[in-house]
Every structure is written in structure tokens, then in C-alpha cells.
Image (cartoon, rainbow, N blue to C red; front, side):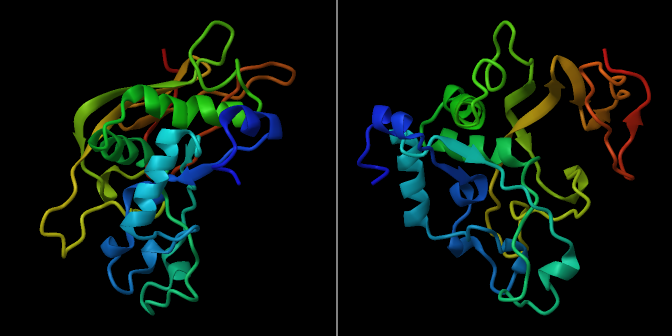
Length: 231
């Protein structure tokens, strides 16, 4: 039904579709036997399903890509027991979303403009935030990243900011030819203020009551947080 409706019909009916990043970058054949870190919702499926999702993105049937970021503690993953039925589903993915999606998309002939649509413009449209989020324009929130699309990214515990330093995209011991990712994020801006750069978070005080522009506070015991507002 969703595929049979054209773009105008989907807009009229208020329909949209999204897919999590791990379904576009991992296949069931890559999941090590018994490794419950790879239990996700929805589950990682086979290559034919992955190809169908990329075709749906190309055709506009699926409009957005989500992180489905859900860190899970090792004890809840039942790692020692290797019990997929009892293990909790979820994986940290928001930090690695851009390089993993970009690396796979580029191999399939997509461009940076496609990423801007899937990761920014389309989600904003689905949430009714056009003109505020999802694009760089006058009067919109200046949310954007500065990145290097060709710079290699080594995914592993040393670069992860999540509390649990495990990623389903890091090289496995059995990998004869580990996957290479590119797309290093140099800086992240939230409403025009730099909140992250070169591996460090920047923090500033919340806005006073009745004010605007507060960003919240980065709470992470293992990261250095700058004391002064970023310039």
C-alpha cells in the first residue's frame, strides 16, 4: 500500500517511513554466532532485505534514516550466556551513524545531498519542523556538522563516547578484510554554538529562567568538558 501510493498521496495521507542505520550497513551474515551485541530492534536481516531498503530510499518510499540509538549494559546483553532470546535489544549508534551510512551510501552511488535529505530534511518534515530544523537557512536553527567525507574513521572503544565501549561496526577477530569507514566529524553546532570539536564536548550553562538558547549539560565521567563557552 505504501509503495503503491505516489509522493503526493503519501503527503496527503501523512505517511512517512524510516529505517535504522544498522539495517542499511550490516547483514545477518556478518553477525558472529552467539554475539548478542548484534541483537537490535528491528533485527539485522539478510543482504536482499538491505538492498530493498536502499532501493526504497532511492525511490522515496523510505524517506528518513534514524540512529535507533539504544545503549545497553553488558549484563543486559547476556554476553556470557550468549542468549539471544533473553538479551535486551539495542546498540549505541548515534556517533557512528554518519560515517557508516556515508561509506555504504557512497559505494552505492549516492551523494552528500542524499544524506542531508535522509538524515536532516526528511526527518524535520515528518516532525513538522520545516523551516526550523533540517536545513541551513535564514531564521532556522543553525544545527550542522563540519566533517571530512574522505577521512578514514576507525571505529572502536578508543573513539566511542557512549558509556559502553562496544560497537557492532568495530572489526571482529574473525574479519579477514575489516570494513573501512570514512567521514570524520570535526565539529558539531547546535543553534549556532559549537558543542563538540575534535573529540571533546563543549558545555555552557543553561539559559536563565525565561531565557533562550540553553543547551543542557554534557554528563560523562570519561570526557574532558571545556569550562568556558565555545567560540
